[in-house]
Image (cartoon, rainbow, N blue to C red; front, side, top):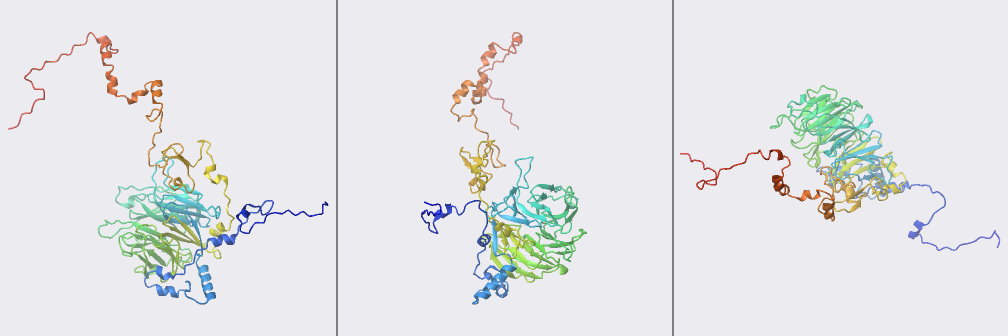
Length: 594
């Protein structure tokens, strides 16, 4: 047989859909890890609803929706026109695709992105901050790289925790952000979650708020100065706004006391929302705040703050929480969303009556952090709804231009439109953060995440295969009170309930629960109790009656006293008078008064 002859090896052929093909090698050598970007982005495309959006808007908006050029042409016979309208709508608003982050355990109340759009921080009522980095996430690793509790203290393991009310990156410097929790002291934190500064708490026993150095009660929200990166303002339930210099946290730079004129309020109310208008686009530098008594107050952003520039007493219904407020880019218009189910548009040049008022169901009675935001160029207004829909409104007449479901059935609390990424970030009560984007008009952020190859699961990613050498067991293992050791994976009960059960060292995972002493050989539940009583001296004394144990030595102490033996012969004899028969055994009775 010559070497030129070809040999043919007969092999069984597999069908195209045979599952065994997944285990057969496709080629030899090192394979390149490539990603089907189009398929990955296609999987994140949001489903298109064919129902009219008029069902999700208020009264008087049905006709407007039908005439809106950005809305879908329902009932159109021309397929090409329908496709053109859909594509134009997708290009106008980045809502065609979405990226879902499920990193919190409770409702997401606030989100913020740094100026470059590379880091996303979300706050929740589970009292934690989740830090996400778009540069490190892949389609299979959509998780936060760090979880931070702003209230945690290194000096005390049993520190209090507070829900997160508001977080906001510094618009002029992406290295720090303002963190406002349900506590009198706001914090300045670094982009890695480290506390850089904590503002001082004021004296709660002083009546005049002008004499206090900080908030005396809970801080509701805050924001940054759009021009000076070292200045921020916080609003509190002590009826004050306080302007801080982050380099001097011992006392506020300015204190603005809002005197309420509501009956029975004693001149105090709660400041619910604050916004600082930017003069970068030619507008005025203004500071606008809303209060629980329904008033809307405006000051000059440069001061003085002793007297407001304008005030509207009943901008919204008193005793309703106005949680959403924002100023347009040119500083001329102010939009507010109150707890009276109304959205109002105000003109700062005629700050007396609303320009436009529309009805919109409010969620601020349950979630006070519900907000409303302008788009980066102020061409639209964004807000959520109790039904879980995202409403994009016209900034001139507040008519809905687009209503799209994000978390149906779960109220949408917070919204934000990032100018550089051209992506919309939302937070809902079902603990989900949605990043809405359009691959044609959006850049970086979620587009980069879905353009990467999926990360293969490494052995170190699973805590079942990692061992803590100091304890000899898995680092994520917990020991239940029954003594059964389980492993806390990402879908286990322990991972979803981090304060339930015991750690490997026997301590409770709940910081509020005192430590239960471990079972020792001296306890009654051990089988070698008799051996311990016989071998360890005085081990049985913990089960004896101390009175009986002392009385055993009474006769011995009387016969052979150790300490009083030298005075045994000189001690006097105790003598008692014998009681007569006429005397009563009981005490003398008191004589009755006449």
